[in-house]
Image 1: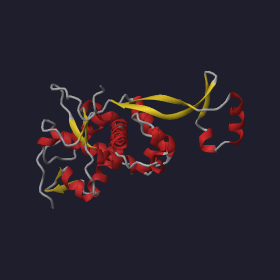
Image 2: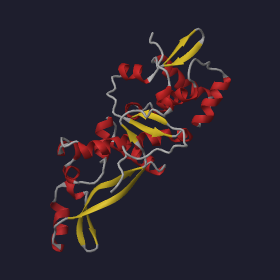
Image 3: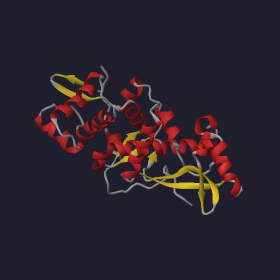
Image 4: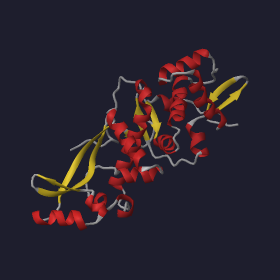
Length: 261
């Protein structure tokens, strides 16, 4: 029996962070994933007040693989303008997840386990985490209809996240949805495999179907091994551990929440 992403055991000897799925959804759908990455990195670096000096900028650039001070400052001051970071007595302080959950009206969809060494690949991780969340949502939500998933996707029983479904969920172009899936796959956060189902056509009917058939179905029909098959949504497996709540041993769970202003 395959282990659920919710039930995978965590390595006892490796430090990790709990990343809220909602923040990754926000970053990917609003094209602000670099700002989200910086916010989480600053939470990882600092447990209290800090200064934005040369040393801090160098830490940011090195840890997040950012090339220039200008780019690092651009991401930082987005966080400051939008009050993800506040300034008091000449120093900065990072707002907690609870404050931003309320500010951005997040619904707390769970947390992914993330290892700090992967910060340069955070965009890939974020895409993989959202895909893993949607994979679970599709599997366990009986209300997901053909309108949301498409006819073929609504019928399949294996783990999958159609490109169009991800695009609708994040409110992004289909091409961007495809890019996110490929990015998560390239960096090893998800794996995909093509799936084909028999499509009942006699050999002589294939050419007629290609000529007169429904245009949406035509895109999915192939000839393989001398028979007609329909290309189904790719089977997806995830290497990301998904948790409903932050684990007590994660560094985020130990961080004290600051008073709101």
